[in-house]
Image 1 (cartoon, helix red, strand yellow):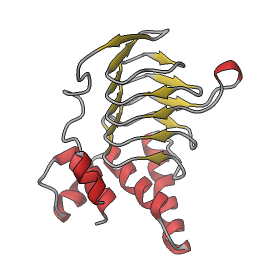
Image 2 (tube, one colour):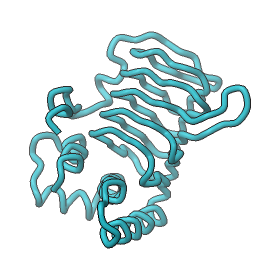
Image 3 (cartoon, one colour):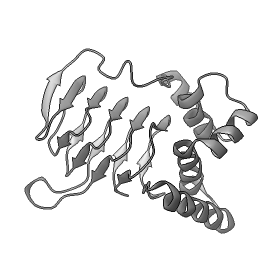
Image 4 (tube, one colour):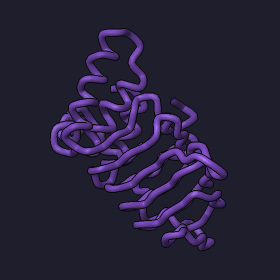
Length: 189
């Protein structure tokens, strides 16, 4: 098992990760199954493994409703909390310890706020939240369920509502980012 997959599994299970735990999560946890095949498809080096993992990712996409292309850049410790109808633009850039829930959209926009979001570390995007356009989301940000974000969000904030409203907060993702990877853990990989 490679380090990135191990770190993604750690975000689900904590320190008790082993081969049996990996098999259990791949078979019975649709969110982790998608992360597993997405991570392998994005890191595949030869044509045979690229084809295999992309086919498996496509099957996962069809069965789970998740659309995250292999070209999307997501840091270590990626966790899909609740699966279903998740869409992330292939040009999005997302940091470490990232949580996303069902119905979330991270996409591009045209016009004045055109572009694709850049999202920091320790960010939690909750159910049915939408982040679009060339906005920058800082570290330790909680995007509340149903929030609409098309503007920059500073670190240590909560965004609620549609249109989104920023509320400064101390450690807003502390309860939501379970088993976070530390800087030391990430830098060793």
